[in-house]
Structures are given as structure tokens and as C-alpha cells.
Length: 212
Image (tube, rainbow, N blue to C red):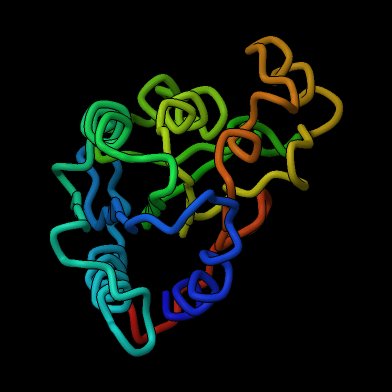
């Protein structure tokens, strides 16, 4: 988490903008899942630490506490996350502002033997029910396109990264992208200014023990 914030301190000032605005953050952490018997120990701690670092005036971005919204575990349903981005953030930000969206929790890739479609798992995700997942490109990308300010998305979840900016996987997975209308121009990477992944599409994240 600290590495993410250190990176933001360097990158945030160079994200294109006509003038400097305010910084806002939506922090999502899911320890426990309703339908998955695979709890995590770290995400809620990650969110707390991310909030602390963002607010830090010396080593962070000095973000006011009122500008940071957190959604944790049972509150972090797919609908709640969509609403937080589309209904709240998209209507209250100026073009010169910066919105940071951070997710810590489980991730997966559909048809991952082929390097398939990366997804986040919200609280109500159901095994074998991909419609209950948050697809990075089918769901999160169009939500983020509705946000009017500069955007940075940080995904601290397994199996989430694509194989390069705006590049869909090859073979059967490429067909899956095209079947969903997910050309390179419609991926998450093209919907936001910056996206940071903690793990590649075919690898698990390795949270530091201090955050577990």
C-alpha cells in the first residue's frame, strides 16, 4: 500500500489537467464474502492504511478526510460500488480534480487457462456466477467513463492485469473480448488516466505480512 501511495505522489502531478483541483478517493476493502468461504485478513487494513497515507501531509497527498469515502466488506456489493462511482463521483467532480479508486480483495479471471477476462469479486459474488463479478472491461470501464475528472484506479487483487495497455489476450480469450464488444479502445486502460495492478493476469498478489 505504501508503495502505491509513493507512486501516486510522483505520478499525480503529471496526469494532464488544465489546473490543479482537489483530490478525492474511493477506497474499497473486502475481508469476508457472502458466498465464498475464502476470507482475507488484509483488505480492510489496507484501506485504513491507504486512507492514513493519502491524508498524510508529509509523505502522502494531504487529501482531506471528507474527500475520502470507504466501502468495506458486506457494504461492498456490486451495486454499491457502481453507485459510488457512477451516481456519486461522476456527478460531483470537476475536470481538474483527481479521483483515486482503490480496490483490495479477491480477483479472478474467467477462462483463466486462456488468460481470460479479469474480474474483481464484490461482497455478493457467487461461485459460478460471473454476472455477479465486476468485469474490469465490461463493468468497471463503462462506470469509470462516466467520471468527469482525472482518474487513477489501483487494483490490489489477484489475476487482474491485462497483457499490456489496451491489449486483449489472444486466441479464445480474444474471441471472448470481441463477443462482448471489448475492443482495445473499450478496455479499462482506455477508460481511465492511469491504472495500477498488484498482480498480473496469471499470478496472485503477494500482500506484505504487515498488512495481513
